[in-house]
Amino acid sequence: MLLRNLISKGTETISQAFPEREAREMVLMFLQHSIGTSRHTHILEPSYEVPDGACAEAMSAFRRMASGEPVQYIIGKAFFYDREFNVTPSVLIPRPETELLVREALDWARLSGCKSMRIADLCTGSGCIAWSMALELPGAEVTAVDISEDALVVASGQKFDEVGGVDGMGGVVAPKFIKADVLATPPDGLGTFDMILSNPPYVMESEKALMRKNVLDHEPWLALFVSDDDPLVFYRAVAVWAKQLLKPDGIGIVEINEALGPETAAVFSQAGFADTSVICDLSDRPRFVRFSRQNLCAIQ
Image 1: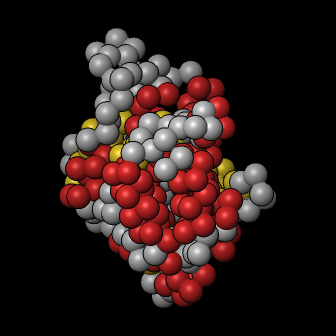
Image 2: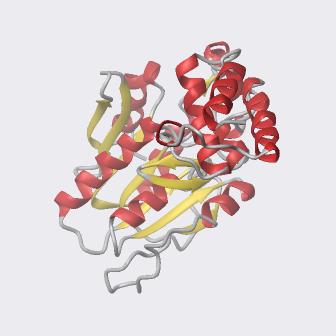
């Protein structure tokens, strides 16, 4: 079958469940990974033929996507901050919105001038935040925490060519991944950090009806949902960790439920943190809360 015809058939199949433009992107992503074509191969090489076996494999994958299975889980890969990460159904698929958290954190880190920064990533999932910080800040020491052993296997198994520098010599140091429950007290021996980052579960159970079937049926609920009765439970926990582990001149940044911006900021203000502020995304939606340890009140 000609590649352009396979793209057309795949797009038609997936469009039963997704907008046509999105369906086409899913087809091109899959074919890039399965047969090595680019998004322009069918244009530059209009007579490009796809072997029958590869066509059958692709159509099977397209039917899975039409049923709601994310293309990222089918190919085992997702892009985040210009890098390709391994993903499985044990971890959330990294979202473009979370890239803004990394950008905000990197801006602060570079302005601080700290040469040996220590960073904690709580509820690390795939490790996309932890790895991005380590890769963008050579020499940084990153510690990532999650309660899920399966998630930690995925996160610690990410491979990047930049890794290999020697600690203390300015090279990229792979993050350290540890199993711990963020809702419990921090384990001993973690030390203190210049920065604490987190994208914890924050979707309320009542918001499930607003979510797509491909998310509800395939992504891990443990990493997504919180009870409507206590939707800020993870932010109170992050505040406890930060009070114990954040250095006097350190900062924290957390991704939030846009419906609970002021309420989430209040968690950190009430815990005694200074300069607590809500940060909006490019669409002017509340997306993050940033807080500082400076002038931390003695609130117990």
